[in-house]
Length: 112
Ligand code: SF4
Ligand code: F3S
Image (cartoon, rainbow, N blue to C red; front, side, top):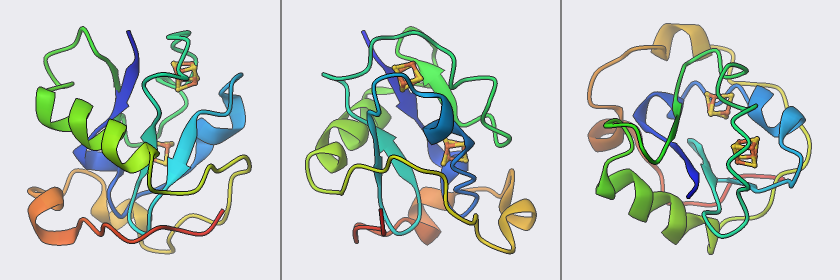
């Protein structure tokens, strides 16, 4: 059981989720964050903290196998993030934009 970060995090990247996670299991890419599935204790406190509503439990339909795999893969490649940073200046404009993964996902690591 884990929670999963999904499409709407991309280019919003508010990072409020990082502040509340009791086990520090968020990892940072250039365009989004992911959750390490083996570290998440499924507490759910990050879900209401995300202004972009991008986090779901793996029991939710939004947590598709694609997103489960992406979280797992990049949690192994990107650095752990322990503190909220300044979100992108245009974060609000990207909230709800379609096809963010296809258009704007970056596999590059972000800064911790
Ligand atoms: Fe962290 Fe809890 Fe969210 Fe998992 S569900 S990422 S443990 S805050
Ligand atoms: Fe992304 Fe929401 Fe966290 S936009 S960085 S999952 S607060």
